[in-house]
Image 1 (cartoon, rainbow, N blue to C red):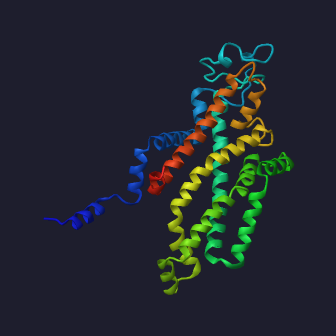
Image 2: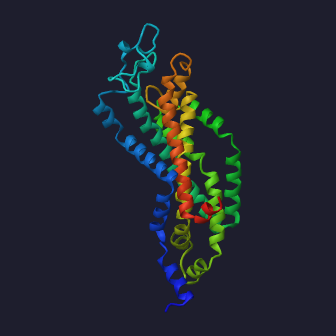
Image 3: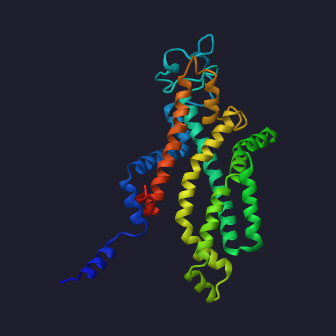
Length: 312
């Protein structure tokens, strides 16, 4: 007959661990599942955008003036929605709005992902090195973090975007501007986590065995921060997408006629009183993707650290 202590040990041994446990907790979170599905669909749309528009038979760069009336508004109801134009057409240009939103997904998603990767690389490099090595380097990185956090980011991004030559590749410019300014908050968290890990026994044991500082940092410290990095990456993506949309909305983002959610929303504001349907689809796309990433990020955080979910 098993003793209570042995039964407890058996129950502990049966508990799922690792990524299997994370996936099991994620599947129980309906919000996270919904977010994951939308994120996956958005990724597929962004990757296969040209193929999707080709299959549907629409093009974001074709001007269909026959779909407009004499004042430049779409013919018919609901922004010109028809079999030929599932989402209607843009006022003044007649461009198919379905094609614009699909290609805009590719543009906005690419900029958001690229800027997130860049900002996370900077944050990981600075946060881990500052927390692990300490000393003057930690002081320098901490002051740089404070200064960067003090920037009025939107104003700074607008100013930089405005002085970039028109011939420069705007998508790459947006990735660099948004990414370079997006690292401080994550770097600060990673620095504090690294400081805590630096004093752990396994780190000291690696150093005592003669491992180099870089080896310890990469093989001992970094793996223990993977969960934090994944969560911060997931939560950072919608912020970067929104930043691109804000810049394009203000006219300093991607150059026309390149489709972008922010540019479509900015153009739609002019017509919202006479043709609000033009605002509906790009606005809904931006809202849905932002919500999905946040729901998925929150669920992933709770799955990786059950204590956060239990404290809610």
